[in-house]
Every structure is written in structure tokens, then in C-alpha cells.
Image (cartoon, rainbow, N blue to C red):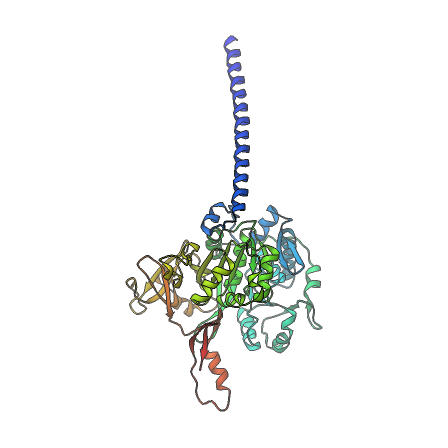
Length: 518
């Protein structure tokens, strides 16, 4: 009995020691927490900007998800009352976005949309875009954003090619809808944002649906997004991007760009582009608040940066160029900015240097394609030092992004070329598209043996591993971030009775990067 009592006494002593240790650890933790908070306040007072790489280390761990639908589901669970979307005076919390997206999903289901069916969307940037995008994701349907800058026949081609049975159209594009409605082969349901005498009103349609998440199961290989990209012929190709493509990109993008739930992200670029849609999705994956610009407006961009204390933005060079000549560029408060990423077209040295000096924040160049789910190379803030001996690197598009393998290849032999020699850029990554919709031959030409994607862009490596875009193998002209196809311009010009023959090429332009010349 004595030995038992002694044993109990030892146990009691151990328990007491554990409690003391816990209390001591708790106090130490509190002290560390206070020190951390004090350090953060001190750093804030210094007014020093966080370089993206440093910010990445402190960014939130992010959402452990594997499909696009989980972005809205998990954020609604983690931060239901946090603001997700802002457009003018309209705001939506994460809980409201999930509820509205679920209503869209239920409406699509009632319209006959099944998993992996396509849903076409034609409108400018707006809250409705995200409701439809995530509504499709909740149903495991495929969102097809149509370029609203296209002419009516091209819009009809994309809607028909995608085999979409539901088409959602913004009020500004009713004239296009009316022009093509009789040519739509598969569309059974048309919904118009703002109403239409002959078609469903979007708000009335959404309000009539249940807000229950359908919770349709998905696979990593399921298509989430189908964007249309064209080659030199101008014939649009549906680029199929999967859940796995997105989640090969999103965690790394969040960390490299230093995004978190505290991020205020400017969504300025058109969402039918991977640069716009991909950038917005990366911010939402991190739980950021998205400030939406309906139109690309440099003056409005400056106003929104100051008003909403924007921390992150993506812009094409022409937007930066126009912003530099705005009257309010010198008086706008840019102190909230942590990063401006830019890309999609060439940038002049004058515009880049002017932007770095005006916005007074870290800059990062990104190069990528729709077929690669966006970013392939990154030129980080550390390489944007205007006083550096390596200033010449500003002409580079940087080094391969996380998870990207990149080769410079002789197109004829398929063999790598030496550093400094120009060849075609080949890319391998989980980010590479599943393929072109209903175009197996085009897919086979683009994704070759070993899973390498042929970009059609020509470039070279320098001795330090930086990539330089030298030219394009393809004839496509990139003007102000938009793809202009020579065949389309030639066909339009050939319609004039006074023109017998024509050829269109791209020529350098200080403002637009490139412009067509006939």
C-alpha cells in the first residue's frame, strides 16, 4: 500500500509540474506575441514596403483545397462575414457569395446543366461574373467567359463551339445577343443581367432558386474554366483548364505574390483573359478582398488604390503608361501598395522606370499564356532596382516560376540550344492545359512527347538563367495586351472594293507595344 501511495504522490507531482510548465509556456507565448505585435507596429511606422519574397514568408498558409469550388466554400466557412467582392457601392461577403453562387448552381441544374457541361458568360467585369464562375464550380460545370470585345459572328462561333446550353449576357451586350440569337445552335436558356423582354432576368432568376450548395463531387482532371485563345489563323481555340491546373499554380502564386486574407486585390484586367481571371482567382484563393474595375480606366484605378487601400494589382503596360499621365498621379496616396505585377505585352524602359518611381512599391513582371494557366516566369522586385549594375535584366521576363520546367529548343531538331541562342520556348508543368476543346490534332501539335508545351514564342536564356523574349514564332500581334490576328484584319480590309491584296504585320509602338501595319 505504501508503495502505491508513493506512486500516486509522484503522479500528482508530475501533474503539478506539467500544469506549471503549461502556464510558463503560455506566459512565454504571450510575451512572444506582444513582442511580435510590437515589432510589426515598429516595422509599419518605418513605412518600409514588404518585398514579395519577404511577404510570402508571412502570408497565411492558405486553403488546402483541390478544386475551384472549394475556394468559395472554405472562405465562407473561415471568414463568412469578411468582404469578398466590391464593385462601386455593392459589396458581397464570402457567405453571401457562396449563397448566391449556390443559387446560380441550382438555377443551372434546373436548366438542365450537368457536370462538365459548358455555361457561356458575356459581360464586363462584375460581381455576376464570380457568382456564375463559382456557381458553375459548385455544380462541376465549366465556365466559358466570352471576350466581349469580339464582333457578333465571333461571339456566336465561341458560344456554339463550346456547346453551351445556357448563355448569360450583360445589359451592354443585348444588341449582340439580338443579332446572334437565331444562330445559336445549342443554347436553350438565355439570361440577361438587367432584364430583357424575351429572356429571363438574371436577378429574378437567381432569387427564385434555393441557396443550397449542390455539393457535386469533382476530380482534379475535371475542367473548371474554358477560355478561348487563337493562333495565327484567328480561329478561336477553347483552352481547357482543369482543377489540377489551377492548384498547381495557386499556392505558389499566393506565396510569391505575398497574398493573404488581409490583401486588398485590384481586379482591373478583363476576366475573359487568364491575366484577369487568373489574378483574381489567386487573390480569392488567399482569401483576399477583391476590388473590381468594370472598365479599364487609369484615372479610376488611381482613385480606387487610395480609396480602398489596395495592396496588390496586376496591370498591362499600356494601363501603367496611361496612369502616368493622369492629373492625379502626383497626389494619389500609394502607401498601401505592396506589389504591382505587370505583363501580357512588351513594356518600354521609360514606362517601367516611370511607374517604379511614381507608385513607389515593388514591381514584378510575369510571362505566361492561357495554355499554361498563366504565369510561367517571374522577374522579381529584387531585379527592378534601377540603380543596379544588372539593370539590363529589366528587359528579361525573369526566371522559371515554381514548378515550371522551361527549355529553349530548336524547332526543327527538338534539341536544346546553347545559352544566348534564340529558340522556341517549351514548357512543362502541371499548369499545362488539358488540351484544346474538340481539337485533338491542334492539341497534339502543341503538347509534344514528354508533356512539353510548345509556346510558339521565341526567346533565349542568358548565362544566369534569365529568360528573354526575342520575338514570336507565331504571327500574332499583341497590342495593348490584346491579341490581334493578322488574318482577321486582312479579311476586313479585303472587303473594301479598292483593295486587291493585303498583308498585315506587327510593328513596334511606344504606346501599345505593337500595332498592326498593312
